[in-house]
Image 1: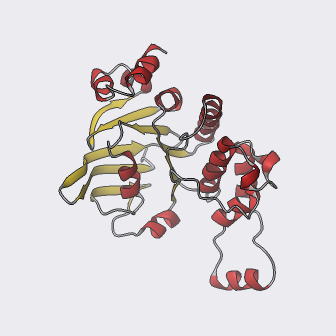
Image 2: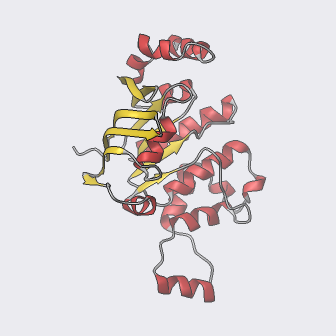
Length: 256
């Protein structure tokens, strides 16, 4: 079966700094793949590279089709969607309207008609996404009225509403408390079970190792381990990479 994402030999340099060095990552259909590593390991840089925001060496394929030469917006149209570490929602639009804007792909003439006659309407994808992420009771709320965990879910939902082939999530659990992180994890697991190929980057080791089907670990831009969560959590190289501020978290994850 062809992987939804097949990224091979991805290398990124910023001046004399090698941020990524020949990184390989695959995301199969309907699987949730985690990308973890200490601060500065290159996790966000990897998402920036495959989504077309930074130059890179290597090859990126989406559904077996190469993306080389395509800019970020063209990759998005091919079905590569991503979120950002900061939540950038339209605070003057409702939750439903935030999703509708993200999912809407009008022609030039349709855009003119919308401007002159009526607002952007909802779509079946928007309604399904709201229900999948448990936001259907908040569809008429403004983002400013939501809890931080709900705002994070709206960010994920907005990317999902575009019906992507691959969903890349960059630190979705940042700033969440334990309860909110657990709820996010449960929802992301349901998204994967619904058939969505997803790449998850996050510092929350418990979240990633608890919900992902497969995990890739980076250190200083290189892959040091990969495999099922139960194997990665016991890998000595992974534990060694996290020595320091995150060591206690790794120990806790290993003992689960």
